[in-house]
Image (cartoon, rainbow over all chains, first blue to last red):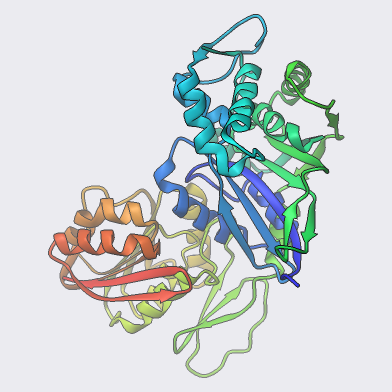
Length: 140
Length: 314
């Protein structure tokens, strides 16, 4: 039997900028996990990715010890970076904020592949396209 | 959509009555990323996603249950224009291409203590090296002969003695000849290392940190330990150098240490020692090279779990 798990918590945080403030404090504090220790290690592990959102999946065990794994930035973050825009469109149907080429979609899908529930690259690309459309980004 | 800067959120966090609003929405697992993205626009501090997990016999492990609902939570400092923000969040969510309609939870008001207290329950008395004893301010301890007790209330600052990097720095400080020494604690956090240096015999300790929370915590902890007259605390860093110091202890991050290597070396007096920690194994080679490049000699690299510390000399 695997070590008993108390909670699996996913956080989307700015790389290198975790603090004991929400969302980290309430998410870990309610399970008695050491908030400061998490912040320190997350910031150390993500220091080189400053400016990106680096999601983290934290597994807190019954003895309140924990491990975490870092994930690739959300597709929306990668799309914003690829297009050099700050945020998506507030009215994505009427107002388009940019066009993503098929090659860029594939590049993002490849980067995200290991974290997506996609069986192949085509399915991953469809997920990336869906996210792009929801941001008011067209696919070229 | 108006957004809050990270600094503004931190400021709100140290206000006299810090409260936060938790905005939570329940979505289908497939919609988690889109919902998280929308919430993150209003809550740049980040979002939390709680997914159900199930035990998988084949892999003998717990995995996220992709069929269950996920709860996406964002946090806003209370007092911000939260009502307007919540309205725009609902509108944005309604316009988003979600597979299933989201279900909004009632907004919860959180006080900072509600999570900081739960963590405090797990912070007890610890011994480090031969004589150092670190204890939380809210715990009683019966002194034994030769004990040097450091009482710490970490507040929101890092440094309770529980983290391996702090523990390694405490042990390394104890091994230095600190009687009459001039010491610098760079990135002082709760002030635990600065206080340890003062209690181990240093005649003057300068404690620096960029975080005002840490500066305040160090001042309060130094006073509570009766070493306020020995520990000078300042908000700032070491850019350009300072000193000269007999001992510098810096428990920060590998990249920052590498960047500050020349300033650290320049700030050490003849025969001075440098204690660095706060990094993992992958930073040891780069930092060692950077320190040796300034003319310092690496005395030893020590480890505690995944964490490392490097001791160097002029």
